[in-house]
Amino acid sequence: MERLQSTSVQLEHALLSLDQEAAIQIVREAQGNNSPDIIAGELISSTLMRIGDSWELGNLSLSQVYMSGIICEKVIDKILPPQSPIRKSQPKMAIAVLEDFHLLGKRIIYSTLRASGFELVDLGGGLSIERLIDIVKAEDIKILLLSVLMLSSALRVKELKTQLHNSDVTIVVGGAPFRFDEQLWKEVNADYYGKDSSEALQIVQKIMGDRL
Amino acid sequence: MKHAEMTPMERVLTTLSHKEPDRVPLFLMLTMHGAKELGLSIKEYFSKAENVAEGQKRLQKKYTSDCYYPFFYAPIEVEAFGAEVIYSEDGPPNSGLPVINNISDIKKLEAPRVENTKVLHKVLKSIEILKAESKGNLPIIGVAMSPFSLPVMQLGFEKYLELMHYHLDLFEHLMKINMAFCIDWANAQLAAGATAICYFDPVSSTTIVPKELYYKTGFQVAKQTIAKINGPTATHFASGNCLTLSGLLLQTGTAVVGVSAQENISELKQAFKNKLSVLGNLNGIEMRRWTKEEATNIVKGVIEKAASGGGFILADNHGEIPFQVKDETLLAIKEAVKKYGTYPIQKVQA
Ligand code: B12
Image (tube, rainbow over all chains, first blue to last red; front, side):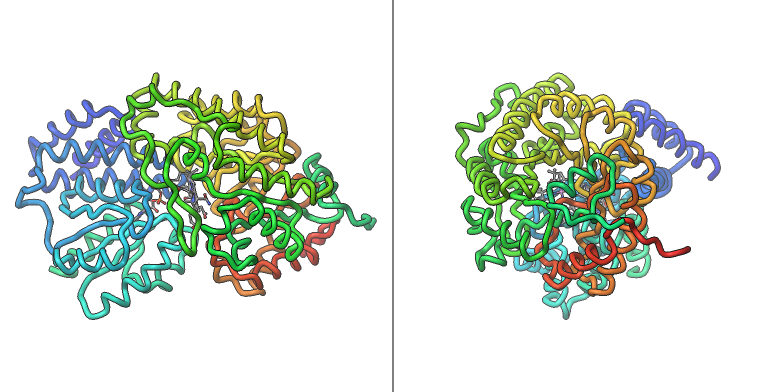
C-alpha cells in the first residue's frame, strides 16, 4: 500500500510534466506487484483524484486535469482494454452533455472514470431531453452522468428528471452552472452533484457500491 | 463632503483614475434582457442593430447603469470566420460546429476583414446609434474575444488544448491570425464610438491554464494585442480566477480587470489597488434566485470591501447577466448601489 502511494506521487509528477513515456514506465513497473484492477482502481484513481482536488483548491488548472486524464486513459487501455471483464461496467452507465455543445467537462469525467477502471457509454453532446430519454430507455442506462455549461441547459435537468419519474435511473450532474450555484442541483432534482473529476469518481464508486 | 452628481462618464473616469467619484459606478452587463424589453425572441433581437441599440437605451434608463453594453454574443466572432451560431429561447447564442476541423487547416485560415464582414456591421451600427444618443455622457463598452480565447470556438476545447501543448508552430500561426482580427475588430468598434473594449480572455485564467503556460502564451498575446488597440481595455476572465496573475496583468497594458465571485473581493482589491480598476464580482448564476434582501446585502457587502479609494466598478462576475435574472432583482441592485455606494463609503463596524 505504501509502495503504491509513492508510485502515485511519481505518476502524478509524470502526468503534470505531460510525460506519457514516464507514466507508462511507472505503471508497467507497478504491474509487477499488482493486478490491473488495483492499478486502475487504486493507483490511477487516487492519482487522478488528487489532481482533481488540486484544481478545486486552485493549485492546478483544467488543462492539467484534462491532459492527465487523457494520458492515464491511454496508459490504462493497454492493460485494461475496453471489453475487459475486470472493468466495472454494471449497472450500465453513460455520460452526456444536455442541450449544449461544450464537451470538455464530459471528456474530463469520461477519461477519469475510464482510467480508473470503469466502462461507460459516451452519448455525445447537444442532446435534447426527448432524445436522451429514448437512448436511456433503449440502452437500459441506470446511471446517467450529465455535464452542462449553460445555465439554461442546467435548468432542463428538472424536466428530464420528471419525465424519468418512474424509472430507476440515477442522475449525477456537474458543470460550471452547478459550481456557481451550489443549490441548483437540488432545485433541478438531480440525485447527485459533483464539483469536479475527483468527486465524480467518488460518487460513481458510491453508487456502484450501493447498487451492487 | 458631498459630491455633486456626476454624469456616468465622469463617474467612471474618476474611478478609473483611482479616485472616489460621487458614487460607485454600476455596470449592469445585460444583453438578452433587451429582447424581453422589446418583446422579441433572442434570435430576432440580435438580428438587427436597431433592436440592440433600443434595448440598451431602455435597460440603461430602467436600471441607471453607468454604461451602454452593446455586446451581442461571443460566437459572433466565429460567425465572422464562417461558423454557424445556435440560438436558444432562454439562453445566449452558442457556437456550432468548429470551423477548423483539422489542426493542419490552420495553415489555410485567413482572418476576415471587419469592413467586408457583414455580420459584424450590425454591432458597429448599434454602437453608432448609442454614441449619438449618449452625447459623450455614457461610456459605451465594446467587446472583443482575446486571440488566445477565441480558438475554443474555432477548434473546440480539446483540439485547442492539444494545439497549445503539442503543435507550437501552428499555435503561433493561429495567434497571428487571431491577433490581426482582434485588433481590427476592437479598433473598428472604437472608431464607431465605443469608449473602451472589454477584452474577454477566460482561457488565460488560472481556472483553465497554469500561470507558467499563461506567461508563455496568453500573456504575450495580450501584451502585443492590447498595445495595438486604440483605446482603453478591460481584461475580463468571465468568472475564471485571476488573483495570482495580478503582477503580469499589469504589464499587459490593460486598465481594468473583470474578476470572479469565486475569489475573495478584498484580496483582489488589495492586489490591484491603485494599479488596475476592479470590475465585479456579483455571481450572476446565483443572482437568479436572490431575494431583494439578498441582493441588497450582497451588493452592500461587496461595496464595503472593494469600493474605498475608487478603482472599482460594480458588475456581475461574467460580463453577462443570465436571461433568467428577474427585473426586481436588478432593481434591488440599482437601489442598493444608490443607498450604500455613495462616497465616502460607510463601513459597518466589525
Ligand atoms: C473559458 C470560458 C469561455 C471560453 C470557452 C468556452 C467553451 N468551453 O466553449 C469562451 C471565451 C469561448 C466563452 C464563451 C462563452 N461563454 Co464562457 N466561460 C468560460 C469559463 C471561464 C470556463 C468554462 C470552461 O470551458 N471550463 C472547462 C470545463 C471543463 O469546466 P467545467 O465545465 O466547470 O467542468 C469541471 C467541473 O464542473 C466538473 N464537471 C463537468 N461536467 C461534469 C459532469 C459530472 C457528472 C460531474 C460529476 C462533474 C462535472 O468537472 C470538470 C473538471 O474537473 C466559464 C466560467 C467558469 N469559471 O467556469 C464561463 C461560462 C461557461 N461561460 C458562460 C457563457 C454564458 C458564455 C457565452 C455563451 C457568452 C455569450 N453570451 O456569448 C459564450 C459562448 C461560448 C460558446 N462556446 O458558444 C457561462 C455559462 C453559464 C450561463 N451564464 O449560462 C459561464 C459559466 C460564466 C458564468 N459564470 O456565467 N467562455
